[in-house]
Length: 197
Image 1 (spheres, one colour):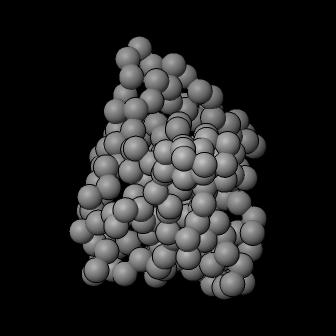
Image 2 (cartoon, helix red, strand yellow):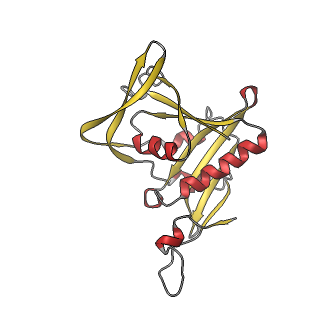
Image 3 (cartoon, one colour):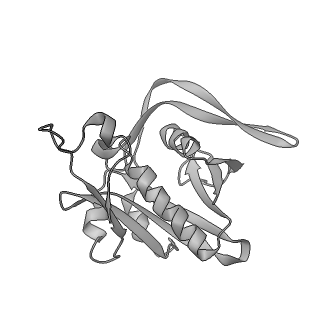
């Protein structure tokens, strides 16, 4: 399936009356073995100048954005995508010019009609171009096809750019766990977001 970014028309991303061209993005199913090298080539790093602090009350939680003294660069381990504990059973890649520019993976949990978004990573040069939106539209369609009532995900309180993007796409805070990461990612809090489909 060929996909045209929504912003492409206003940005002139494809050839139109002699303008510069932007490669078309194709969204297709991820093949675990054939696409592994391309998926593992994605740089997961991002930079943020703020983090979310978890504020709890007896019957509520909220995230309060705090400015850092210096920018923080975070890089997730791409090797986790193919780790034995990563229980995703469906995935999609976004391709342009024969290279994988982003991907998403998800797994269905039938007992509570939830599709878990396991991973969503976009190559840095392709962020804020609609690639993540296109992949998440595919995830949403898969969720509806399975009879899921919602898509659910976990991310870290330092992933302010990601949380902001998810919020623009309809995800809302549904939980948090300050102890979840333990010594794996000390000082970080797991936050949970969900979106009805």
